[in-house]
Image 1 (cartoon, rainbow, N blue to C red):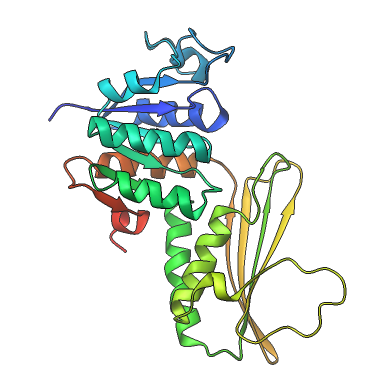
Image 2 (cartoon, rainbow, N blue to C red):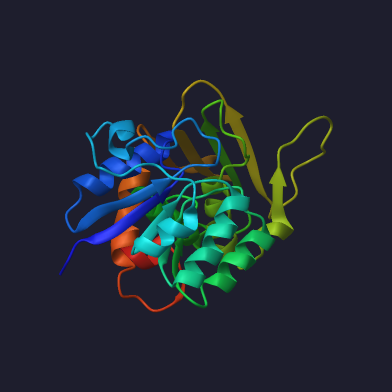
Length: 268
């Protein structure tokens, strides 16, 4: 079987460069090309040189449609507006798409789901194997413990992150809500300030911290009377996300159209 051709939109950013390195170093995949936004100083440069893997004879372009036409699958860690446009291109070209973009609205997710009726899309706010195991554990613990245990989710990321709570924190919140058979939107409390009164039973609280170069820590706390359970994940390098995204792209080969998650990829 020939190597699977994987492209990267937003290929010159930190995550994009890491994705290129992972694609080049993975068995069964080859780099199909990459794009950046019009006006980027990286346009026309060799994507391999930018990513530090040597020349790949692949110049960075600005036309995602051309990339989708030549790639078998494309990986997207860009921004919500761009990701929705890329999902529509994937549907039009019938090419697989892996989405790691965070900060998506319900309308964005609905548009991606519509595109997935025509092609294979894998979407997850976090592509890490361990984080997806943490999601499964969070759902199970929430289902096992009653409402006497208060659920709080803490996360910290680098100072350049633009959305809060993180997509991973919301992923974990959704898992906790599923475990309790409630909708997260009905019970979420995003930050507290001032005289808030006593904590309302059944709510799921979020706290977000930003600073320095933190890759990302997440803690799910189940706080009961005289005891607390903590489920923790600490990321020390972004390569865990690149590794998972490339694995998802390879898994998508030959799969029928649909919207999948990393749980599908990992068989959880």
